[in-house]
Amino acid sequence: MLSSEHTRRDAELRAIRRRQPYAIDVDGLRIWVAEDVFPPDLGYSPRRLAAVLGRYTPRRALDMGCGSGYLALVLSKNGAREVWAVDKHPPAIACTRANVARNPPLRVRAVESDLFSSIDPSTTFDLIVFNQPFYPSTAPRGVFGMRRDGGRAIIERFLIQARGFVARDSVILMPFSQMAGAENDPGAIAARLGYTSRIVRRDDDGPHAHVIHEIRARGRAS
Ligand SMILES: C[S@@+](CC[C@H](N)C(=O)[O-])C[C@H]1O[C@@H](n2cnc3c(N)ncnc32)[C@H](O)[C@@H]1O
Image 1 (tube, helix red, strand yellow):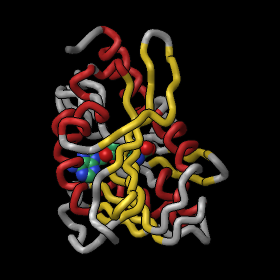
Image 2 (cartoon, protein in one colour; image 1 turned 30 degrees about the vertical axis):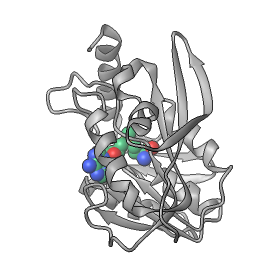
Image 3 (spheres, rainbow, N blue to C red; image 1 turned 90 degrees about the horizontal axis):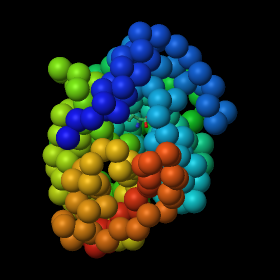
């Protein structure tokens, strides 16, 4: 259901888009936010996910829906040996590559792909972070991948495909705000699909809780 809060958020998104492109320093990283690429300083999810990433020590990690590449760079900075960044939006991949070049010696493999479609099925990841497009958008063509359904369809598709790309004991991290509507909650969708999940961070933002889900698959051995 679309509320006045959603409409207001869409207006904020459009205002941010008007000031793009711009450069910011965040977590010691120099990030270029290209035109039409999701800004990592928008909303709470990117910074809160980045903080949670520090608790894990993956060998091979994936930033699904990488936007500017901010979370992929955080993973590389934290010491992950191999970091992949995937987005289906070509400007996001170009922006991620530009940001890797701006932050030596960090290394990230950026791949244009609709979810896992361009990733070799023999590849497995210890950690996947997906700041998925959520919030029902009122913009006619969506903004940064957000659509009117509030995320449910992409979350389902992602979690179904992810089963083939996770190693035993892998974790998947996904944010959620109650503002997006219970039907778009990755924790509930994951449970329906046979994953286990728990909340590893919770912030109460006014009337709506913002959470980060840690979703675990009963994956295959790496
Ligand atoms: C909310 S933004 C997150 C960007 C970045 N990870 C961050 O936290 O700043 C969601 C990203 O998912 C990407 N996306 C949407 N649908 C996708 C799909 N089917 N496959 C890959 N990426 C997708 C969008 O292009 C967008 O860059």
